[in-house]
Length: 281
Image (tube, rainbow, N blue to C red; front, side, top):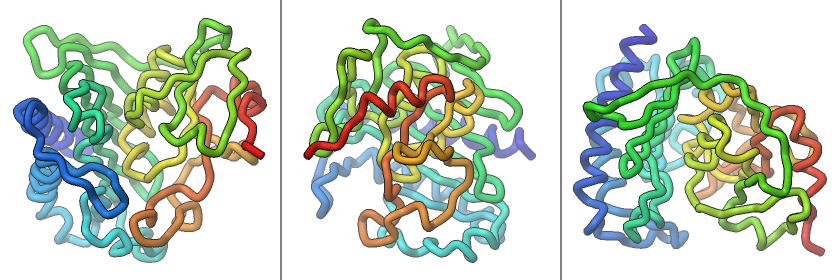
């Protein structure tokens, strides 16, 4: 069954990537009511994935959470989520603002939770030809994805020592509410959650300050876990290990947005990164 679902993920990522590469030069961007960006690629990839999952969704054993869903509250009920074995969580284009400006840091994210815990996941960065995926047993990093030069290597535990040379990723709104102690290391803001979450799993950065939506992390969740990294609450250090609606805002456009920020890091690096972050007065 793992292979069936994973093969479907890979198929959807390949087809979605073709759409993204075809449209990046003229993506027909518009603004949603919350001023986030929507492009033709978001819409087309969402429709593609919905069509591929249609038969499974009709069984009641599968649920879909899609960023482009019109009513985010449709499945926002813990009992309803627990009634299904599998939850697909999809971001057709993560980093849409980058994509709409023809910046190649964007990705397609597809996660499949089993009993609301991370299980299978895939993140594809079409313009970079990079892909990360988890098959339920291990995770892999692919270069030259969907080309004749494809190369694959396993994602292995990583615990990057932090030094002034290190890179820590911040969310695009970080400096609105927080300050960063740059004596620990440099913070950079590429503005694409799936990049921030996947790259530290192969040693490209020591972590990420994260406060976003379920679709931003579901595809990369099993990947960074394979690297020995976790999402831990900034305030308590408690790791995120299962979906619970109480962790999310539960209202309007922010229905699936986490209530509090998290730090992606190794367990050993968490306390140093946590200490480098302070709230603005």
